[in-house]
Amino acid sequence: MSYVDEVIDLVVEKNPAQPEFHQAVKEVLESLRVVVEQNEEAYRKDALLERLVNPERQLMFRVPWVDDKGQVHVNTGFRVQFNSAIGPYKGGLRLHPSVNLGIIKFLGFEQIFKNSLTGLPIGGGKGGSDFDPKGKSDREIMAFCQSFMTELSKYIGADTDVPAGDIGTGAREIGYMFGQYKRIRGVYEGVLTGKGLSYGGSLARTEATGYGLLYLTNEMLKCNGIDIAGKTVAISGSGNVAIYACQKAQQLGAKVVTVSDSTGWVYDKEGIDVALLKEVKEVKRARLTEYAANRPSAEYHDGKGVWTVKVDIALPCATQNELDLDDAKALVANGVIAVAEGANMPTTLEATKYLQENKVLFAPGKAANAGGVATSALEMSQNSERLSWTFEEVDSKLQSIMVNIFHNLDDAAKKYGAEGDYVVGANIAGFLKVVDAMTAQGIV
Ligand code: NDP
Image (cartoon, rainbow, N blue to C red; front, top):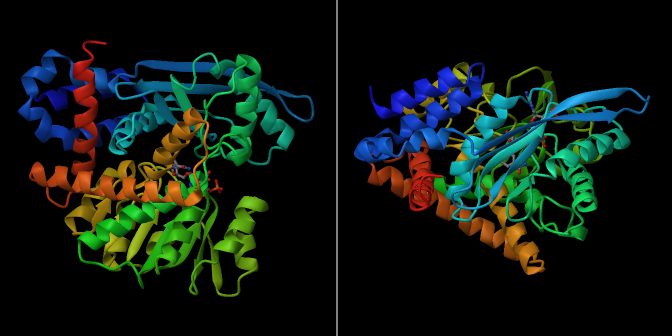
């Protein structure tokens, strides 16, 4: 049996009931096969892949908090410090009832390669809790965040592990967590990114993942002789990534006709009104029915459906496994040209394969949504320098990082005989740097 298959089997056997983690490991290791086979003996001797798929440290802890009626609740907190070969652990905190150890491990594993691809010195980690911020008062959110950070603060720091936002963790949650860290540890340092501008945040961090997704998508299209201007785009989700992807797509001359949330989706034939979307989602924290109620050109539909609309470009920006084989078939039947992942692992393995077989340009999340973590690393640099850069400075660095990422993965795919397969390219390019650092640092 090949080394890759042995390690995939081992991961499945040793990590029962963690299907998302199995899926992420399979996707990465399968596409590294060509590199691993060239170095099989040395990698096996060093147990390199076993070390890669085993987090350096996994933390699980109790998070008790009191609601507005005086009732005590207990959630579970997680932080998986996956790999620090190229820098301090870096990755977001997800607050969603679906969170479990397997999901945090899949996200942390992906983060290793994503962070490597940015070219910046950041290792891979991820964390969060099964806490549901929806419908909670500000005071309840603060109570949860303070309790969560009381424990997490023992394990993180500006030079060891720097968490950020993710699903359910926005500026408000980061603020409460930063305040509690400072209070407990007594240091004012850049321990979290995604901070508010008045206390060390970076301009353009809010926009970074969505903007970065479009910078990379635009470069991928350009290199394939396609102009994004005038193209029609379907976006799923209506959170941080989706909103700013929508904004940048429109700035580049494309027309975005859909957005969604966990209860339904909107088709807007005139193109999504970003100002209205922001008002509904960022200010009122309301459902998309509110968007449709205020926009005559929009239709609201319950359930899932954005991928049934005829578009040139699809940008899944909500959550994992939201674009399956049937969705991929519908997109291909409607003539889609490109799919780029704003969310983490939104496309199932079968759907990815189907899209690639049908010559759809496919940009995987670990490359396409790396703009968020890249700008977080720029926030870390500004914190260390005690300086703040202008929006234009950060945005132009982000743009060149995303363009570089595309060329790195394009080159890696070509070098290893998989031209145009950006999944293989991204995994190989991300992997080689991490492996080089791991090998140089010995058996740790
Ligand atoms: P937000 O919480 O801001 O938004 C998430 C959006 O996805 C919401 O519209 C939400 O709808 C929808 N959604 C969440 N879960 C589901 C579900 N199970 N089914 C359908 N829709 C769902 O998160 P972000 O925009 O920050 O993150 C979106 C994705 O992008 C995630 O995969 C995240 O890991 C990834 N990502 C985010 C980065 C960032 O900088 N923010 C960086 C890199 C990746 P509702 O409001 O109804 O829950």
